[in-house]
Image 1 (cartoon, rainbow, N blue to C red):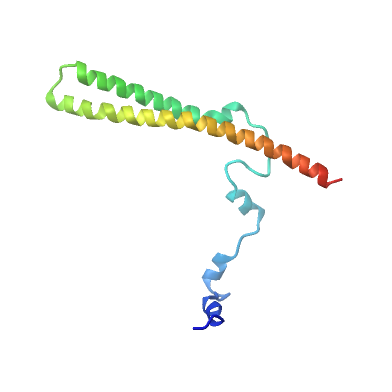
Image 2: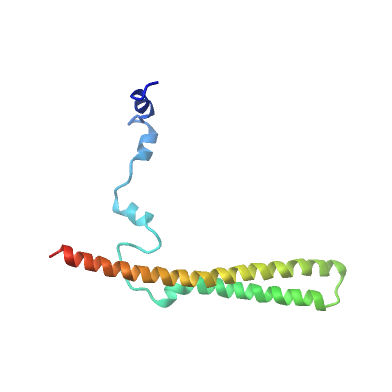
Length: 137
């Protein structure tokens, strides 16, 4: 096979279903669906609760699970229970501790990421207005 024959062998027939999959969609609705979490079409200001709601919920649930794990672990080591119950509590307690700590840390790390994103968004809007100001003169 020569170099000139290779592209012809790799061409996709226009009638094949693979060709239809390769065509990009140019509709506004598909652009809106494929956009990320914040819409490009509307620039409505969001409240602090709408921005930080998910990390707050993750931190709250993580803290509750962590406290539950602490209570179960403390009970496992202080109560006089049967051998099977003691084994179960000693396994479940640390599992809840680690799960709660993981969720709490994820929420705590998420907050600075959102703050940085908001700061970048403000800079981007500022530079867009500055760019349009100079280009529209």
